[in-house]
Amino acid sequence: MSKESIKKQIFQLIIFSVIVAIAGVLFQYLAPKYATVAIPFIVVFFFLITLLTLHSVLRSSNQVAGQKFIAGYLLSRILKMFSTILFFVLYVLFNENDRWQFTGAFLVIYFLYSIFEIFLLKKNND
Image (cartoon, rainbow, N blue to C red):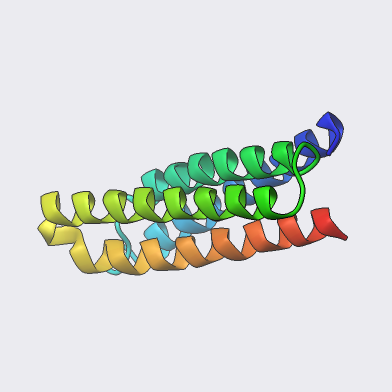
């Protein structure tokens, strides 16, 4: 994959993250009882972890093929999963009063970023 294409996908990730962050701030403003104060941190976490995952997968897609690419992709997914679980567990353990709001926001943002990542990778393979 060319550097311009990688830069384009990173730009799309930035735009997507800004949109999610704005939606999170609006949700905090419109429904503060149901929102967590950690929404900006969740967005930053998923932006960084998705950026690392996409960069490693897209950069290596031209360098390796077949089984090595699949193994690298699966390794990136496993690392992403464990870092996500670690972030979630640590926050919930240290912030018990915000547990349910954080869980809801975390799951919504997790699925949004997962869907976004799937679309980017699918578009890359077409």
